[in-house]
Each structure stands twice: as structure tokens, then as C-alpha cells.
Length: 116
Image (cartoon, rainbow, N blue to C red; front, side, top):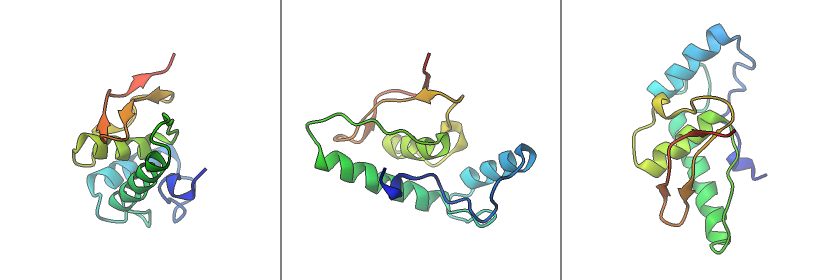
């Protein structure tokens, strides 16, 4: 695994109970340029992941790639691929979801779909 493909840095808070976690995630997406509760700002995480995926795709243009990550990181990548603002509306709808994209054209080919 490439370190720059990791989840957004949430080490400032550690584990949060769902009653605290969900509002914090909402704020993370709503204010992408700000560090919410010490978390890595969404815009920084998006840039980091985008650079890593582009780098890997450039190193292996003849191969398909599978990008497996937490839903929040996937949402940041999807926003970039769709050229849309960072938004929680792009977060995965449920655990075990995926989308397809063309890393050469940097385009989303689908929305989130549940893996059966």
C-alpha cells in the first residue's frame, strides 16, 4: 500500500462514538479547507489521494487498477473525478460500495454501486 493512499488523518481525536463521529464527518465535508477537530482538511486529503492515484496510473497505463479505501476517501476521489465540490453527498451509500473510473481520462464512469 502507498502511504499517501491512506484514510484522512483523524489521529487528533482517535475513535469517536457514532454520536460524535457523524457530525464531525459532516463538518469535514462541509468545510473542506478547515481542519475539523484537528483532522486533516478534506482538501488536503483529496489532493494527496488524487496525486497518488494519478502516479500509480501513470506507472501502469496498460493495466487496470483497483483503488480500495474508506468511503470518505473514495468520496474525495469521486468529487475530483466528477470535477465537483467536496460534499458528503458523494460519500458511499453503504459499506461495500464501489464506483468505476478511468484514471487516464480522470473521469468517473459510474456512481457508487453496492457490491453484492
